[in-house]
Length: 116
Image: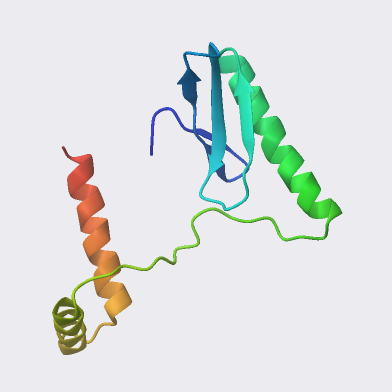
């Protein structure tokens, strides 16, 4: 995960600096709703992030809406049709589902990337 990401109640938020405004700002990551916050230093940006998450959850509760959760685990990947075919055939030959093969490959990628 990013070193400059905030975390609270299962949500993650970015932190960026605006030179023109001389302030920090960010948004909650991984959800479609736009939840933003700003502050002038590390303490205030973290407090604003937490308050924004709390406000978002309260707004959802008031409107009887289910709050979005970040990163559902579903995403679409586009590959050439030949690659798709070859992946399915290899997965079937190994007795696995395509999702399992892709998940394993992504886990290996993350482990290798972390070692760099």
